Image 1: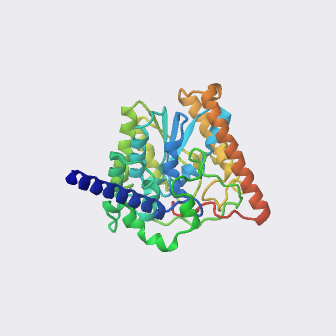
Image 2: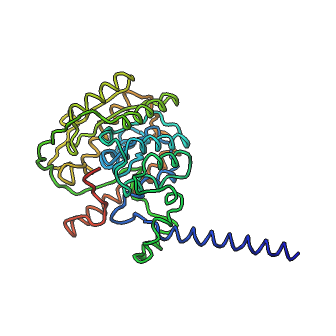
Image 3: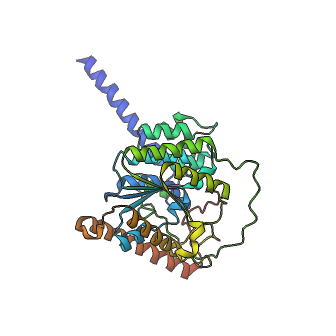
Length: 359
């Protein structure tokens, strides 16, 4: 009897300790609710209950440039953007792999700018792409592929080891968002309503080698293979923004790859006028990313292509899904109204994202 009681006490101690450590970990992990909100984007996907026949994967050139609500309102396309800041090609592959664990979209669209990177870049960006993923072999392999020399797997498994030093800088928001966060996107789309016209960019630097890296192209191949195996149409795009530079030599390599695999590739830089973009009004940060006005125009063009080239459902005719999207549309409009009010009051938006230049 004494032995059984001792075992129960030990087990209770282990459970209580584990719960306390888990709570401490939840407390010290960054919440990404203000300022650098991009770290919240990946995990938001898991809470969305609507079906997604189109999934966009990539960096800021998808999550800032494509209005998912415009795609729905104009075409009835139910879509989601699984994007994150400086999302590398292998991170996009493992997010695609992860997505296919939950649903099978009809179309996956990948933005090719990330192909410029062939090696891991930054722990902070890695964290924003990976920490929000649910645990699976996809997350494990994503971490292994993405870690820089100074990172280690144990700190991804137990983020408390990485973020324990945040104890001294905790704020009320860390307690407020400890267990539940506010949504920072609308189906992966990050909204900006301010306007700052496209600037004159300096000349593109001359490179010693214009060959896209083997590692990046390997994961592009794997994405194409994975889509083919699952009967998903795979589409490549280059967003219509001019900076960071997209060299003609890179463009040709992607076009050659697309041709070899029978994949559609659309470079929207070449057809900015056809989209109707006015880069004196349709960007919020000097031409690096589109604002809501540009993102809606870009979505219009993408939607026209998608409807013409894929057998997509018009979910406006599905009462259950349409009800879900009506809630998203309301939140989209509320976000826009809040930003426009803030612009009117202060002349600028505050705490609406990191606006990372090197995405």
